[in-house]
Amino acid sequence: MSKDLDAATGMTRTEARSAASLAMIYALRMLGLFMIFPVFALYAEHLEGVTPALTGLAIGIYGLTQAFLQIPYGLVSDRIGRKPVIIFGLLVFALGSAMAGSADSIWGVIAGRAMQGAGAIAAAVMAFTADLVREEHRVKAMAIIGMSIGASFALAMVLGPVLNTWIGVPGIFWLTALLALLGIAVVVLVVPSPVVTRVRRDAEAVPAQFASVLRNTQLLRLDIGIFSLHLILTASFVVLPLALRDEAGLDAARHWEVYLPVLLLSLPMAIPFILQAEKHRRMKAVFIGAIAVIMLAELALYGFHSQVTGIAVGLFIFYSAFNLLEAILPSLIAKMAPPDSKGTAMGFYSSSQFFGAFVGGTLGGWLHGRFGLGAVFLFSALAALAWLLFAASMKQPRYLVTRLLKVGRLEPEAAQQLALRMAAVPGVAEAVVIAEDEIAYVKLDERELDADALDALAVQDA
Image (cartoon, rainbow, N blue to C red):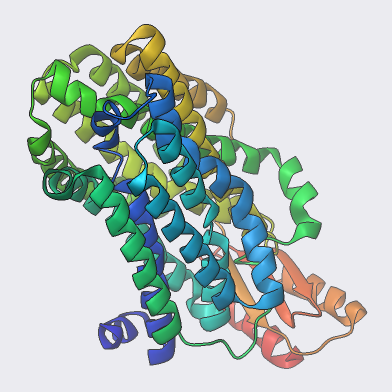
């Protein structure tokens, strides 16, 4: 596996092993979080004290604790090391899984799910990746982790209903705890230890940049975008299992027969649109179009949730657009964030994603209890419409990528002068040189870049 990855990416064997093992840790955790999505609403009916609103809260509560704790975990890992923080987070996650698995009341499950979210290792894993992988291969490593998250979600949608038949939802929670312990074994036995741990501005949040990133209206639009996307996803799954069983009449043990083909068929649908967005520079048009498709999918689920075929078609449309937006939104963050603030921008983006899951689960459950199952799909369609109107005013993105260049030890004044010279290179839009990091963060247009001139500057001043 690592040899194949090494050959495909140009990484060293150690870098390939690092990327693959950290992706596995992330995927094991996300698999555990997602497996209950397609089955929990059915199981919750038998819990003491359950209401539709509390069912939604149980599904989404992990997002609240994750949203607030993931950046602090990353900051703590700067001080005490990545491995201790990740191991602690996985232990907290395993404890939460055990709590939820042994609970016989809805409040016990809510507490367990909140504890699961409190094992918020996302930012620490990303920072660890930056410690272990060189600047020129870091984007590839992050992409490997991103693909593992997508694969774990798709697998969870199918495994959840199947495992529910065999071991039930409590068994899924206990299996999730075991997966977290397996993740700890991977951290201890497989992931290399970094030579040095330090802040990497392209991969982790920097407190001094919080205010400037939060004032950036274009980045806030994208934060609201990922918030809305995961609000819609989580709200929909509060009622989708019930719609399949109660409205469409499909036995719970057969729900995987809907999820599997829908996911397999929808995955390749995003590829041609990603090419249009990136290669042909139609990012905004594709982005806006995908939001409109999400709205249409939710309207289809609202109109046809009493038919298996209607639900399957609605889900196919939804996932085709969902996969596309999951790929486009991080790309837009990278394009719009200041060159030395990408890590901070991604930190708030991730927190917005998890907070969206919390709000979606909570509102979805309340709407289901108050107005019925169909109201959740209608609400999700209206949320997509609001997002569409908000996103329409987004600026056309500049097609820039961030490149990191080593510049060696410099005095602050020399670093400023070097940044000015780099910014003057054709194709370079912005350049920031951080003297203490010995790194230049450069945003550039690859089609217009004078690569030799930029590389000469970095070599000359290294």
